Amino acid sequence: MANIADSIYNMRLLDDLARQETLIHKLHPLVKLLTTVSYLTVVVSFGRYEVAGLLPLFFYPVMVLALAELPLKPILLRILLVSPFIIGIGILNPVFDQQTFELAGKEFSRGWVTFLSILLKSGLTVTAALLLIATTGMDRLAGALRILKVPRIFVLQLLLTYRYISVLMEEVARTLRAYSLRAPKQKGVHRSAWGSLAGQLLLRTFDRAQRIYEAMCLRGFAGEYHSGEINKISGWDWAYLGGWVAFFVLARMYNIPLLIGSLLTGVIR
Amino acid sequence: MSHHKLEAKNLHFNYPDGHNAVKGMSFSIHHGESVGIIGANGAGKSTLLMLLMGVLFPNQGEVCVGDVQVTKKTLPMIRQRLGMVFQDPDDQLFMNTVYDDVAFGPRNYKLNEKEVEKRVLNALEVVGILHLKDRAPFKLSGGEKRAAAIASVLSMQPDILVMDEPTAALDPKSRRRVMELLRSFKHTKIVTSHDLDMIYEMCDRTIVIKNGEIAADGVTSEILVNAELMDACGLEVPLALQNCPVCGSKK
Image (tube, rainbow over all chains, first blue to last red; front, top):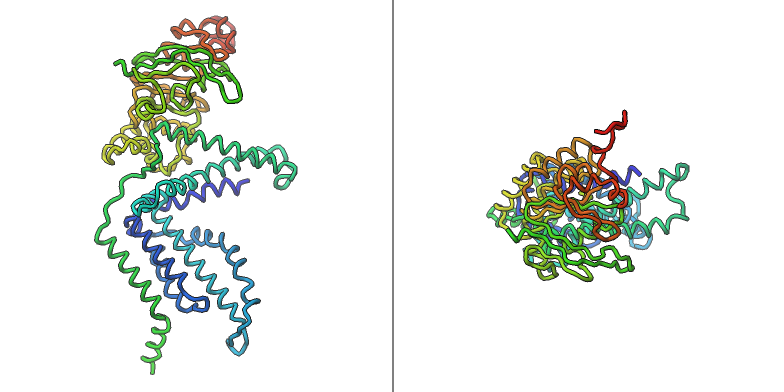
């Protein structure tokens, strides 16, 4: 049961991180959103066999991580959380891909290359999304989406879903605690109680969500979520966006590792 | 100051399952009054508060704040005047920081950010938790959460403060602090509670509810000492007014 209670605290970690005041945190949320979107576009635009081309793109998350003074471990843990899905998607590629290539005198299926490329791409994209939330926060991100004229209803849905996850998890934690205290010899929940437990949980969460909604309405909530004022985009913000986009474009157009390699070998010769 | 007046006229309310929770309640609360609403579990206190706040609408009768009837149309204006502190502060606090939570109401009324900040800091200072403004609400203690919930309503500067069990689940010191806090407000106050000692100390007037009807309405010091009435309504005389638990002598 401690796991669930822990994860409630862990879940809010990204919000806590987002409240720091570093160079990256102070950037305009819209700029960070656009940078992330262009980064994601470039990462997924690489072909399935192009692994080397992806390597320079590691530079972006590493820089953001360092400049925003974020702890590495919790971010890595969250990437690991999605890794089973990614491995599940890519693991059969080496079996199905009939083409082979030679490395160190041995023959390998080219499926391993596509598998590696899926791993890298998903790792990079998930990291970029996590970094965006950990340096911006959900509320300000929603503000950025509103500036982009994303319909109010979608933004609200995103925000409230994010909020209500913790409501649901708190209810789960409470229900499971109550269950385990009266079923000391059981591991987990017995299947005879699954139905009623899930049903109860759903109803209780509805109730709780309803009360929270009422509390919001009583304080003048009328469909628009105001997360405070967002400053205007400054010259420095534009420079940040421009710099990164230029780098992404370069990394997409030229194979930077190859260029550096040939440059180095040219110098050595 | 007629706009601080709150009037309930012959309220009736049935829940969709047919349960008749409120049966013909009428009363009028004037500016600056502090009124306790008491009754046994299931007597209809919470339903009554929901009707007053416009969360539920009566099947018959009407609620008026000032001279304005509470209807769907007038709700935004009504809710700016009436602030409600929920029984469970967790229902009320859902933003990332205490500051954002207290700012939620003022921001919804589209005040500029400077005014919002002024109100938030002021409200937090009044309830004495200014130092917690950047903390996450779910990490606060029970008493701190309650204070934050009260601040989140005060920042809207309501004319009438409605509180559902403000002292429930608080330790004695926190309870005392919340009571002192509430006493210092010059607003019209409406408090429901089972903490009859608190009602005795804080409210000049008490409305006793029994089975969805008003069983008594009058001066607190007369109603709460009426052992017969209290007993008939599933309540008892406040502990402070009962005999000494050690020697049994009358206080």
